[in-house]
Image 1: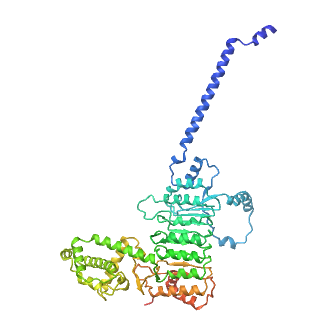
Image 2 (image 1 turned 45 degrees about the vertical axis):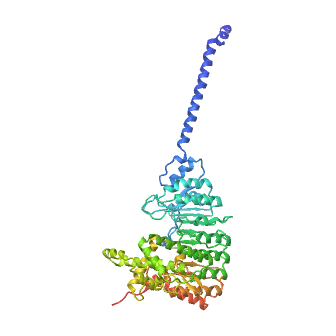
Image 3 (image 1 turned 180 degrees about the horizontal axis):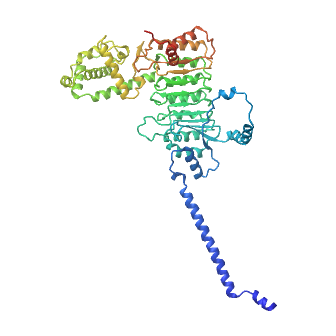
Length: 554
């Protein structure tokens, strides 16, 4: 038995070979399965590439999918922006004791309330949705957590699909100069998908509580920027940052033409910074709303800001640039004229005696007056009469000589502004001149302020001032009665040219000026006078007054 058992337990040589072959086959099959699994995983990773994902326009789903594809597991959630609940007077008035069911319900909800209480501190992306479409995001709010490069990279993929996005608000998100540059490069992607929309979708940006070492906020106001409303509150912007912002508003060779409102409240802007911003307002004709509340502006800064609201003297570089623009404009108009008209004009110039020292200026004046007269004749006459006029190009020469009498060096652009046409007292001519100026303004979008009508006094050139700015807030600064007097002078000048409600669409000047909480008595005569002058122009108070007025009784 023992020998037989021993022989039975001894494996055969063939059996050893077959078992080894089976083991090798099993290992080979396992390796093949592992290779197939790795290939499947690699294929899934390739298919889950963030660049290949097509966004659907639903920010919550798109953001989560892009974060997952990028390997970002602990990403913030997209939630609807909470709104304050209205207080119900019925529940507050009842003094009944809570029932047993209410107590059980409150006990069961205690865990949920605890989670929601501490869940407030988790990073979230708050969105405000359209009322009509529950999935269309209108505004994005990110508050209290650091926005990194990878978040901005994900936004660059999902934000272009949001066709209704209008505003992005970033409050204390730890921006740096590098991440700000990435954010600025992201903004042009938020463009409308429909060609019928005129303005870009995302036109309101708010960066508050994000101090930058290099103060590169001016990059948001570049010449090609599409931002319309910009808020930079509480960013520790000083005079250097205000200088960069003033240069972004306008320089001698260009200006920002899209920005409408700029909020610089709660910063550290002083007199020098206010002066730089005032320099930016000299040639800027798009900004309507400016807030400098809660800063460190004193009388010198107030004098600079008030100076641009009424006629101010052009500097020498501005005068040189104005002459260059006038000559360039005259050369363009001269090249558009027919050859016969140019020959007749040259013959008249040779026959006329030259006035020494003003030949270039008179040339520009004549070119502009010729264009005005030509536009008037084309507009008033019929097509058949226009052909007759073309046969005699020198027919309008006597009128043109009247507009360029010796001793007049001013440019004819002043005449429409003063209500004078080619024939004084002719209202029809004046209205046609105004209409032609409006057509030119619409054709060229925004005319360079250096080409506006100027005033010449004592050999100096004066610009009428910035009448486009409608709202100026200087609340809680350090302005005394010296700066207050300068603003009184500016308001009095603008009140002289204030137009009634039925006036044209031209600029009207300041409609709202806030100088409260400064270093002067609110009841001082100058402040009271400013309030009286501004009261009829304030649109809100005028509207309230009209609503409170009793109906007209017959």
